Length: 235
Image 1 (tube, helix red, strand yellow):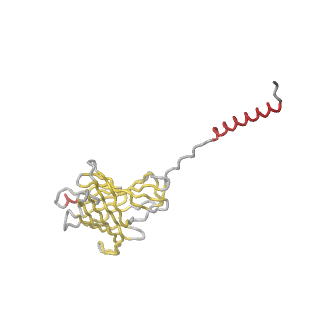
Image 2: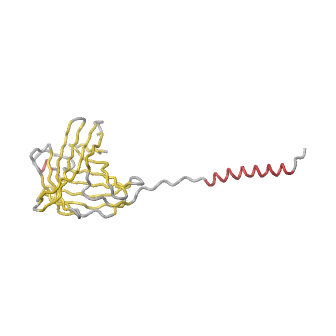
Image 3: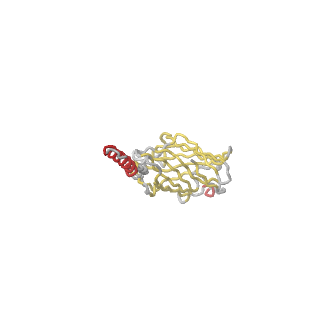
């Protein structure tokens, strides 16, 4: 039986349209590109205040640790015969439910612009011993932090002993934040005071990590520190 020419023409158009539509959808489909991580941000103002935070860590043996940290403004004081602004730092570390390290620090600086003068601190494991360090050099953070940046920040000493230094580095994190890492290196103040080795935030090596948004708002997100020979990454 012969089919009408109109029927055959309509069938051909229908089949062509279906084939073309399917092929068009396949060729035009694209996967949105993944957002790139933030590459630069305004540098945060120093000192970076932290009202109070508790971070957690687990050591290689499975023991649970916690660290509490705060850094708050503490008015004005005198340091090396200069009127300075002070900020009070409290740091304590517990293993399970036992406090194994407690540090109390006062940092002194001039403000507007920020210029650190020194610090005084003590440890619960060294009762009655107070160490005072003076800043000998300070290089401000660049106005804009860029991923891959690094450099010196602060260094100082107590006369001919007890040196300390701080450096910084910047690493990528997320599309909205980058990481500012402050590396601290202090001499072992237990040994300096004729005691057993003492490590902590202000004795030995540690790293403070801050998450920084594009506008310079900074949040403490991690502390890596060695306590009595155990290196812990608190988050």
